[in-house]
Length: 212
Ligand code: AP5
Image (cartoon, rainbow, N blue to C red; front, side, top):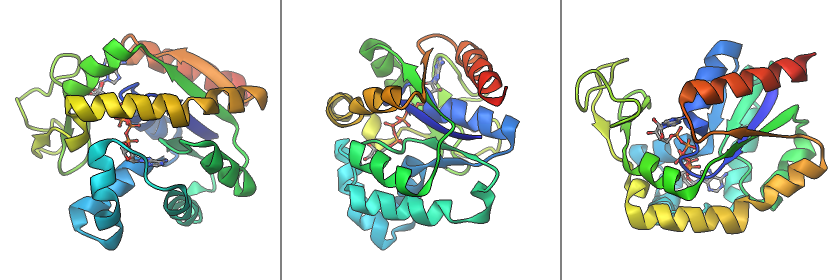
């Protein structure tokens, strides 16, 4: 199953991509995670993208496409994958279509006020990347990851100014992909403004339909 998870920042793409990829035993490929790892490790790529990410803008298409091409050439993607946060522009979608055929695009629908509440309460594990929320999905012990005991932190781009900019960037550069994939007959909408379980049930139904 080759899926794209599309939606505004904070829509729940990463949370659900983690759950669904474990259930289907296919990799979750998150361009955001790859860029954050590069920043953490101080690589050349990390140096190029750090400021862009902190401001909530998009990394240039050529750099992002090159990175995803390399990642998708690895053998673990042969049985399928979930693309979480890619493509994010029409040129990225056109580039992807040159080397991959997608089974479905899940469009996470969510109002802006819910996005702001989710992102300002998000905490991420520094060691394993697990995602929490101070109200909706709190860890058992404050600031400690349930899975690995790592420290939880707030992403630099989850500050209110960066969140507002990310929402504007989403409207301008990513939202046109909804019409793009709808025209191709690949788009499946879900309401992601409620619980994680509610999103999961809707995605499972879509996957069931795609398989039959
Ligand atoms: P990226 O990491 O992809 O960020 P994003 O798309 O802005 O998405 P988020 O990770 O913020 O949100 P999400 O939808 O995954 O929500 P989550 O599950 O965490 O990208 C970061 C940056 O990298 C970009 O700004 C850009 O600079 C660069 N970049 C990445 N890809 C790029 C590309 N293709 N091209 C160019 N640049 C690129 O959930 C959010 C919170 O809500 C969590 O706390 C979670 O616990 C909670 N939550 C989730 N679901 C629910 C629910 N159903 N109910 C209640 N709470 C929930």
